Structure formats: C-alpha cells, structure tokens
Image 1 (cartoon, chains in turn yellow, brown):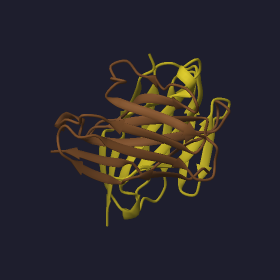
Image 2: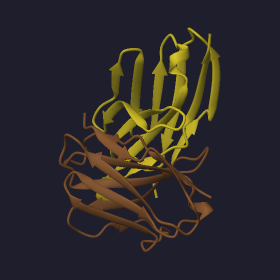
Image 3: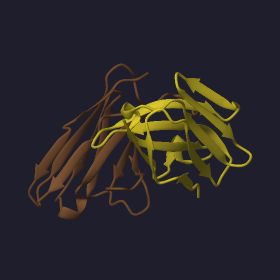
Image 4: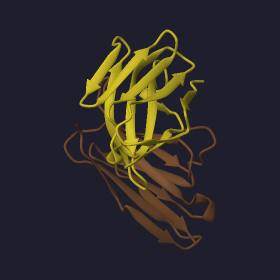
Length: 114
Length: 116
C-alpha cells in the first residue's frame, strides 16, 4: 500500500526565506505527483503537477522536483511571503490503483511571519 | 483547470439526522468523482470513488449504508451521511479528475460537518 510522508510537519520562518518542503512515497509506480495548498477550513488548490516522466515543474516562486526512483519530491518556495502561510499537501496517483485514487501526506503547516 | 463546486460549505445537524452534500463539476464532464474525509490535523483519506451511472466503490472500513453516494449525471455527485453521529463530524471534500490517468485532480471547497 502506498504511503506518503511529509517532512517537516510544521515550519515557521521569517518573511523572505527560501524554503524546502519534503515529500516521500513508498511505491515508485506512480502516474504523477501533485502539490496542493490548503488554507484553514478550505478546499485544496492545486499548485504543481509533475508527471512520472518529468523531473521538475515551476510556477512563479514555486519549484517542485521529482525523483521517482528514490520516491522523493521537494517543493521549493523562493522568497517566502506571509501570504504563503498555509498547509502544503503532497499527493501521488498510483499506477494500478483503484481508478486512479490519490494518496496524501499529512501536510506541512507553514507560517511565514513579517 | 476544472471548476468544482461543493455545497454546503458548512452544516450543523442534530445527531440521528441525515445530511446531503453536493459536488458539482461546473465546466467538465466527470465520469469519476472521489469523496475524501479529513479529520483535524490529519491527511485526506479516500472514502469512496463515485462512478457516473453505477455503484460507488467504497474504501475498506467505510460503511456504504451510512455514506450513500449517488452519481446520477456527469456533473453531479452527492454524498449523504445517514443517521449522523458526533464522530461523523469532519471535513468532507470531493474531487474530479480528467479521463486519462495522468491528469490533474481538482477539488471542491469542502464541507465542514458538525453533528451535535
């Protein structure tokens, strides 16, 4: 069974720092990996989608990498801002899984203070 | 990306009553929708996979008679929590994905259910 782990569970940093959030998964047979942002009491906003054949994706200040063979992904946030404060979730879509379900990590709760 | 609308965004109900949550795909015909549940400080856990025109597929440990799922059209899936109990209080969220396995997943805004 696929298991997704995110480290750290929580992170508190001053504004302007560059951040790295980590995600690992146990089964490398995946279709893709997706990073989401979740604000308190809200739904999920998709940030980046990396296909299994890709190594990285970039969107603005966000860069996500994928090393499928080692079961790892990192989300890099450059020049963090207070508005980046949220919980960041990593999810993988496994091959051969039931109708393409997603497996989620528990998330990294990020706080960026001014 | 796809726009997914979930309603209501929050609901408070009495123990023993039933609550229906709607998930609509506004600009995309979704043959498959997923229902997740999230307890505080926990990750999202898949409850069931909803297939248009057929019975839902439930994850192990999820009572299909308690969590009724109906996916009558390509744009609407509903989750009904029957005879709700306080332990059913949680954040319920639906998701749609494209037809191909490698496509992006999009989520509704979620429903906060509180059973008193």
